Length: 342
Image (cartoon, rainbow, N blue to C red):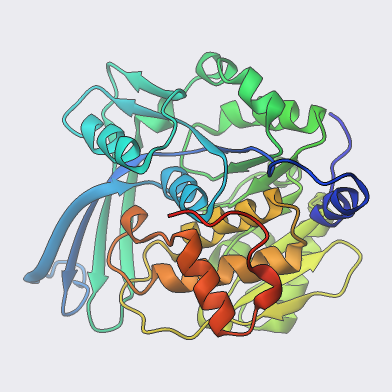
């Protein structure tokens, strides 16, 4: 495997090199599931049935959500995933067609059903509980991913999560590293995983729960986030971002002092897709040559906008709205570097 690069090193190289014609290509290797989302006045306790006030079926899955977030934020993004040949198939393909997204690497499975997520949202607190079945995307094969070899060899950033067949990921990371690209892992949904697997990646982006599970450090504040980030560094990860909800995001490049990027206060309606919005916008900014700190601020703005709407993929923010929020909060240096889309 070629040597791994930090986002700071890539940004420095961008600055020293002649001006680029376009941002780097982003590839998301991840899940598509159909979201079955209901809202009620409180989340049911075990054995309890509550009456809902709202129900919606829509596109979801962490990989898909993050690809949509990146697309709307302005990235040249391609999604590698797998769906079933069933009634939910059109939920994916119709949505991507409407978004104008590439569907060249969306594989189909005749046996496995399209994945599904059962999402319950408390309409008073916006807290949620989610049960995910990976379905077809959990059965994606190495042969299928190899069909995207040319795409992976040409991309600058690969973004992965934990909702697909993890056995296909190392070869994809290897391919991206061969040309000096960055491999990013959003280790969600939360579960224990081999530290050597995590160490393949250049950047990890867990939330506080995921960071706690993966490092053994209970993350609640700046001090504990720094301890968890140090653990990730020891696993071999160069850069770490731990999202902390309303506290913002803790960022720590290897060998540098970590710091908190403050959250953008907004009127919260539904927090379901906030992490996906953050990750999609983050890789968009990194692909444009932004530093890790600036990319995290851009991502915080996108995440803030996403929680002001109901749903996951449909709630992802467009580039012009992200830039408007950044301008309103005095982040002028992050605006106007690339064409506005959406």
